[in-house]
Length: 74
Image (cartoon, rainbow, N blue to C red; front, side, top):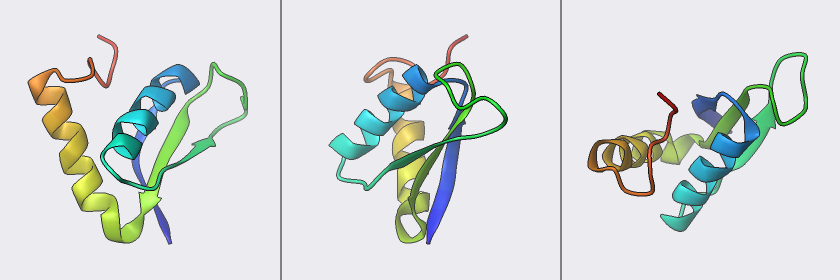
């Protein structure tokens, strides 16, 4: 089963997060949500349920250390 670990505001940000997680060895799927299925709408970042906790920890570490840039726009 796949689990949502983050919802990115748009596809560009989702792609960065997918690359980050994939580079760390996680399997990652992206799923557009809402009415908009283009690059402007929100995108769910999904990983296998068994990897969800570790994937979220990885995103937190990268956000706190500034590696690979920010995961969210400020």
